[in-house]
Length: 187
Image 1: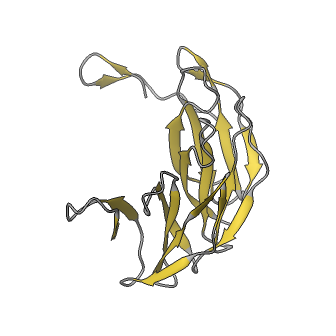
Image 2: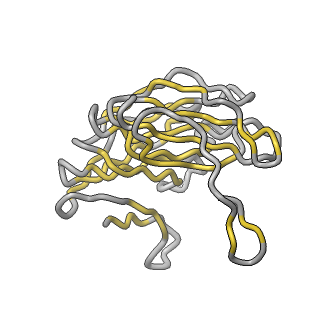
Image 3: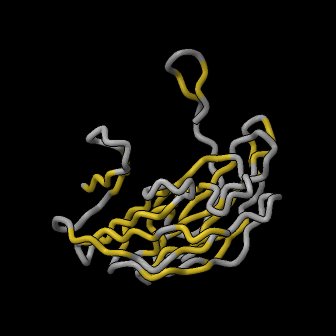
């Protein structure tokens, strides 16, 4: 929906993606200063990337295979090359998939990391103050949160798991107690 004026939107423009789109991120993935669209497709086990060609128009989707049941997507530079990479919480395979950006709007094949059972939500933020983004995942079926610390170059250490309340659906990371350290908030 395109905003015209202060509070009026034009009719929707639709673009095909994979089956069962569950989560979307909008970020410039090919360094052309135009926001692109990345969609996690739950039933087709893919992420779709649609590149912005200007004037609110997008290319046909390019699909990348990820784990089973991708539920949540984040797009952040994971390997310090100034190119945003794709991170996906894969509910059905209990993994997170990381797809590194080749720099022109294309991505490498996924690298998967094991997390708790049934991950729903993923957040990417530096939790250990080493200036590298880490992965935090809310695992709905195992009532846990997994933290995967960034080992550098887009690879991650094995998860550390923390028990939380029943069926964590969403995770966020912020310094909630003003001690200059990242805290995890779970719903």
